[in-house]
Length: 416
Image 1 (cartoon, rainbow, N blue to C red):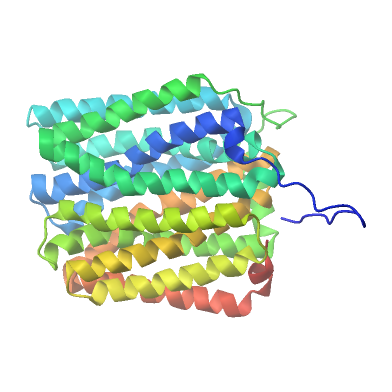
Image 2: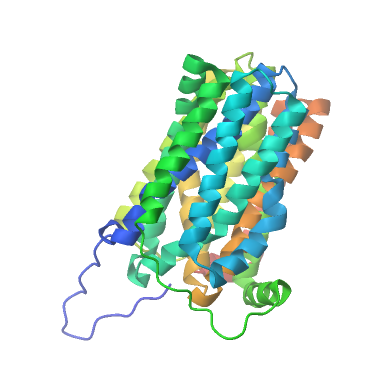
């Protein structure tokens, strides 16, 4: 993002009001808090249910996380096209209501003791479908609701919503599960989704900027693909995001939960604590970035954050106590705040609004569509070499890849 200097003799321009002063963005933010609480609780609760409730292993846990994210691999790109063409508020309301219905069904089945691995897989497919369709819409709304000067701050504030959910989602779901069983953990998610719809009903969203005759989904996606591919820095950024979703992300968000049970001899539900500390770290670094405002060379900061995170992940796979994991989780979160804010800021500031839905569909694919595949692969590897070495293996692959691009891609280092 570039900023113009004030004319000679003119005082430095007044800092624009914060993004929370924009009512539509504020309402979206409150909805996002509930939505991401569920997103983080969902992955945790299904993993907890498989490992402890059904007494299955890490491969089955990876399989369930895979099916939870599988719809994203097939739907987020099309959903990005819909976000640029259809009423975005209606899409969000419909998908959030669908997700609430799935959580209610899961709660009823859990209360009736009718859950088994096959039923859980079906539930995750339905829940993943509702989430996948809404993801690109949700992401594309941020730059549509705030000014360009407020965008970086809005991304940081939104990251705080995501990280607050990372802290509270698993913890609150575990509290509900401890008090009311797995049924209570699912009802907790259902209530959050229904409550979030109230905020969506009050949002005024500007119309889409797409114009001209509607084309096929393939043609619409090809336009977004050309935008990404023709910008070498943006292309490299997306390739790194794809790689992270196959390595570090599933290692931390999925394999770590099995590691807590298999090699650290804890209840898998105790993984809520390191997840919460990671969220706290992301919130702290996001708050720092929000206060700092826009910054130069965000591409270099993004890559350094990835290398730092990969190093911490490697160590996390090799330590032998739960207390050491907790310290590393907080450090991982501090690096993660820079990772999240930098990559979203770079993508959204480099994309015209008329393409935003489709580009954010590709972004959602990089985050949600590929991670389940990585989780399934890491689960299979963990069955052979153990969870700790699997986490460290994923970290090595990620570190080497990012280090090579950091050295070779000056365009990405200087981006932003």
